[in-house]
Structure formats: structure tokens, C-alpha cells
Image 1 (cartoon, rainbow, N blue to C red):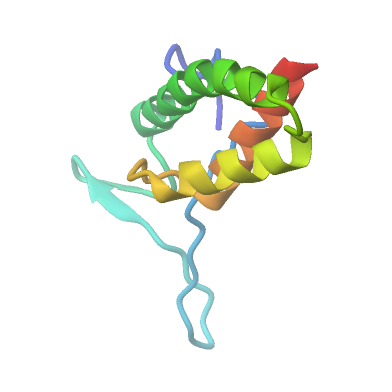
Image 2 (image 1 turned 180 degrees about the horizontal axis):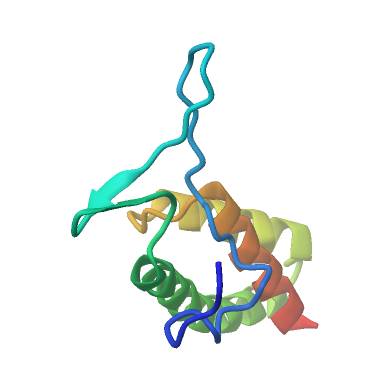
Length: 112
């Protein structure tokens, strides 16, 4: 995918195809949607930008939360990250497992 104004600020490690799919059968197939008369496989630039914005919003909330939890006596990094991972999965964000893992890695990186 070539960068566009919507996607050029999105890091390369952000999941580009969070919902890969497969269709059974002997013939090769791919999953696509019809949008404005065109077949689109994967996310549109606008959808990708929206998913990235959701992750950035969550990141801004999770970093201070993680810092508070790590400051508690007995707050281990592994336990805090596991709690964050499960908390994200329990929310109705629609994030894929790849996006959740990307977000957790970003929280860890922000903690240093």
C-alpha cells in the first residue's frame, strides 16, 4: 500500500490487515468488499487511519494507568501488561489481536 495523507503518519509496524480471511476450496480465492463500485481487499486508508486513531487514544489512557499500577507495591510489569491486554480485549473496541499486541508493545515502550 502506498502512503496517502491519511496513512503516511502511521508507523510501518502497525497491523495493516488485522482481519485476514480464507475461503475453502481448490481454487485460490481472496476476500474483498465492494465499495463505491470497486472491490477492496483489506482496510481502506480511512478505515486504517480510524483504527490507528483508536489505538492512539487508548495508548494515551493506558500509559498513565500502567505507571500508576507499576508504582503500587508488588506491581509487576508482567502482571500489569497482562491486565492491560485482557482489559483491551474485554472492551468493545473491535480491535484485532494483532492491534491489541501492537498497543501493548507501545505501552511497554512508553514505560521505558
